[in-house]
Image (cartoon, rainbow, N blue to C red; front, side, top):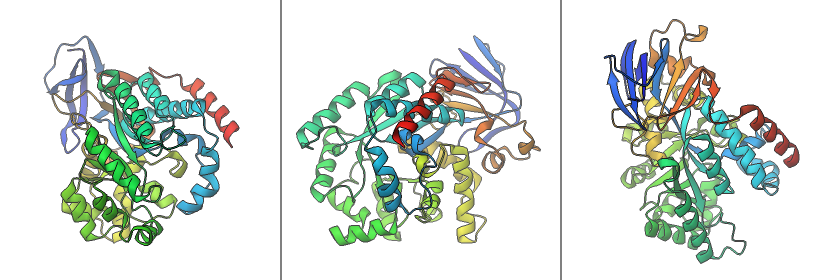
Length: 427
């Protein structure tokens, strides 16, 4: 056994296993080899007294380098926010900006307990290299329309995607995966949607998309295609492969049944949806139907951070208030959305839970804080009291990325300096 974490309260991801602070977790290589109360021998022992151990948080939808634009444009609906603020900056982005933004995002994610994320943005190879440097787990999406091929030649775009996939899928000892971005119905024509569906089926890859985020998106889809975004995806075959769909706010009961039947994993981005005034996804209805809803932060330009603990709190709270029902989206459901469901959304089968044989992706949260005292219920405290800054230790694939709030793989001060320089150049 390489690492033994002792004397912790254990949240497995779907329940509280040990509440009295007597749990021990053993790590051998990249995996969890023991969970229980027995003392074990290990090369390294971490005393977790006062800590809550839980699976690393899974950010199932984000755009990492958008951290460079955080707090730049506010108080606008999605379309104006994009056209007036985001698109002009994105036109200036280069590899250096993407590198600096990616490293800043990874710093923020690790420091707030995220161990895995699903990303969609530009210069994907640059983000992939940042992921390997940080040691975090990720699935990075590249689309046939977001390739570097200026002429958007389909065959060239397919070749570029395959080159990216062959280089990075499985890299870092399995830390990296790749997927196919299909951004949205409003950035594709029907042929592009069908070409993407065929390519995903041909390559056996999952799709990462935005779907039914705003009411105007649905209205425009009906005007353009004659059907809603979800029904257009269904018609084009995009739901016949594993699909992770961000937002899914403006959907009806029949579309929820389609999502359930097709195994689509919706990603709830509560902060971003409120920030842009997009609406409230019908998360309680989806959970009741058995749909495995995950949680994402979206990009930090519309959040405006990457703190999944904050995102869990919003997820649990807004649906109670919006539906006038305090029983909705309870603590257990919320944690599962941010862990086990998130791992499914991102495409990793052996992460998202503390379980023997699963990858050693876990975090220790310091519960000995005034705002967590008294710790009457660790699961409830995690949702309603804990802050991202309470994360003390982060382990991914059996490797310690942060301990006692100190990053082990990244130089935070240098990263913040470079990110500030990039922001000055862009804005």
